[in-house]
Amino acid sequence: MSLHALMQWMADTEWSVGLHESRYAYSIVESVHVWTLCIFVGFAVLLDLRLLGITLKRVPVSQITTRLLPWTKAAFVVMVISGVLLFYAIPLRTYHNVFFRAKAVFLLLAGLNAWLFHSGPTYRRLAEWDTSPMTPRQARLAGAFSLALWAAIVFSGRMIAYNWFDCESPQKSAFMDTIAGCDRSTEVSDASTVFPGH
Amino acid sequence: MLLPYFQAIESGPIGEAIRNSTWLFPFVEAFHLLALAVIGGAVLLVDFRLLGIGLKRQPVAELARDAQPWLIGSLIFMISSGVPLFMSEAIKCYYSFAFWIKMSALALAIIFTFTVRRRVTSAEDARFSPAVGKAVGVISILLWSTVGWGGRWIGFS
Figure 1 (tube, rainbow over the protein chains, first blue to last red):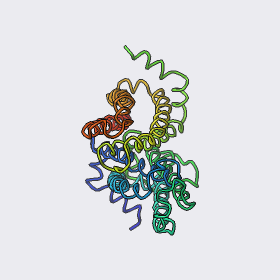
Figure 2 (figure 1 turned 120 degrees about the vertical axis):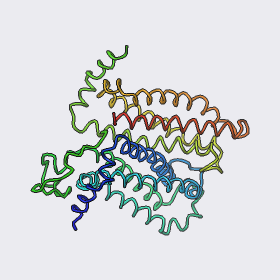
Figure 3 (figure 1 turned 30 degrees about the horizontal axis):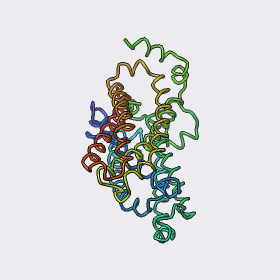
Figure 4 (figure 1 turned 90 degrees about the vertical axis):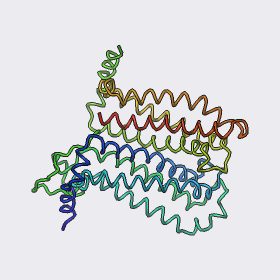
């Protein structure tokens, strides 16, 4: 079964149809997604800025990772759940959306960046630079990458709502069609699905 | 009563430029959302502390001082990106319940943040009881959340 076929099947399930056709459910899920963005990205940005030595300079990094990170992680879980629901509501169109695909790549890179930093030698020696306002180079790099990646994730996430490069929109370029995985010879069943609230 | 003004704003040059562009509205909107994340962090960091969670080993005043430039900076950024968005669809906003909820909450949030909340978060810890701090934290979170939810909801109408 191809991924396209899997998305097609998902789009036809009762709950998926119910979610995108409901008066309020989709909007509420999306609002929850945006609201947890404030907590998750907001706190992630604060940690990144601390790693860059820009703000909260007198707060030990370990204080942020032990006291703020649990909230960040909890908000991340809610973001993922609400994000999966948003995807599930309109799976086929989202799967072929170039911004969604870009966001997925950025998310993987952000995860990789966080994992590399947390398992790397600099973080293992955190005790040595915990209270210092000036952070090691690797910490600053990790903070800078994280900031850039999360900005790209928020940006591309917002753009998923727009259908410029969708398979059912007029073709912009063969390149964009390749990224979107469009097969213009077949019909798309949720082609008319419009995202509520641009 | 206000409708003629909203109509004039919508047909003004900025509103028209944004409406005539495919990319402009989404781009400004995406930056508006990025600033939302920053203001969310700056507000919640201090409100969490007032509620006794998060960075509770640091004095409230110290966190508030660190958060202040980010709060003010992102607020300015949000307003200067939000105004053009509004200008491009002022009449829709006029008839949008969510828009009026958002603007009322925004006015209250700004007033509350720069009067009551500022006094409580700039005082040394002993001057206000923890209960006052908690109340201020809850009100701040509720007001700013209403601004965010109302904003998101303008798009759904």
